[in-house]
Image (tube, rainbow, N blue to C red):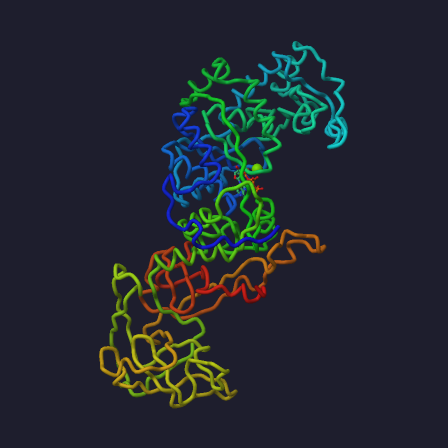
Length: 589
Ligand code: ATP
Ligand code: MG
């Protein structure tokens, strides 16, 4: 798939309801205009078998965003029909992440809230002669199913009587049969061109404790059946999902139409009354859109879980991970993520979005919202030799160059300051604009210093620079405007606060780690440079901050106080993103 870089101005403006004109919103608009629906109801249905990733953000922004834009509502529904893989830890994580992205749900539901309704619906289908209990083994089922080019064959159990099927299904529910020994199948058409309609399974036997219902059920509904009927139960009008479910839509509609919950209150009324669930069942419509794929990233829960389980990263919230918690810990912002989703747009065209587009969205948001601070990550001492020993003063810096609303802060200065080692070169490469022996540079907000002497240790390493400060170049004096080539940042050595700073980068060093056509596993493309830990110095106003406070460290990039480990007296910062894209050049783009 080609990698796309949507133009920055394609949809940059915050979108009011009329703003975004994708095909999903158009369907919604038409349905409201025609009176088909008076209100829009959507749902976001993750399976709680892992944490959400950046791909899910697209579904969240669509499901919740469209409901909000059109004055409807959106449920959060945990699609928990696979016991064993699901965990309450993930349920809590998903709730947290949805809220963090800026959305709230109308009702919190679980597919398992409807297990009794689904069971009664299955009995109804059996009674109508539309479902039967099959004894074929998994291997036999596969064999009978046929292929894309050959029709399937009817199971020898397909013509069981309604009475026999009811009896067997009730005994499945009572736990009389072993796992995998029987399934309940819809009776549709074994010759259907769409394989999903070849008598798909509706229920399987699985004696495993469930994260919500414990040991109450030895049988579990299959995804298509549970999903369609859960949507119908909640009165969902537009059921948005990704393109891989397009082929499932006929089955989705079959379940919705043949059970027909709105016409059969006996299937659900007493259940919802007992559970205190408010609902008006309806017939939903499924609409598919393309998945979000990002270059240099993995958007599969299974693979993200593998990274965690094999210890290749430090957990689901490792800042290198494309999980929402990883991105959050890394300092990515909800607004920046929402901007990405808006820019990517909604279509039925599968594509891969360049990771640089994502980083660009984050930079754009942080440029506007992050206060500026100074930090030195690879320190070299600079002595301002013509200031007296014990000199101390307080400078006042603007917190944001483009927005006075951020106010000002005090920045202490003493005779010795830290500068970045790379801002000095004894033998400057061509075009070097910073400090060299005998040369001048502006110390940001202080004045112009001249390097008079380079101090070295026994091995010849530079350990300090002795400089003089031009007193006429100080802020507010007539000489302050005198031109020099470079301006560098600094931190007062006596006042600086030692910090651990984690320099993060992309987790994979190739654009398509998933592409295994070269015979290499995606795990071989992990970027060993994606995490580098350094120790540097912060100006005091960068240290005494709350976890998750974000800054631009001048000239270095955007950073966030780590939400787990940062403390004012022992700061820990994560680099969110550099100020400029450093990957385009490497990729030769
Ligand atoms: P994964 O393959 O990573 O496990 P999933 O689709 O199985 O993802 P679910 O928890 O079932 O994960 O997904 C919940 C919702 O999020 C579904 O509606 C699904 O279509 C949507 N979704 C998942 N991944 C993406 C993606 N990359 N882009 C857009 N929507 C996605
Ligand atoms: Mg899924």
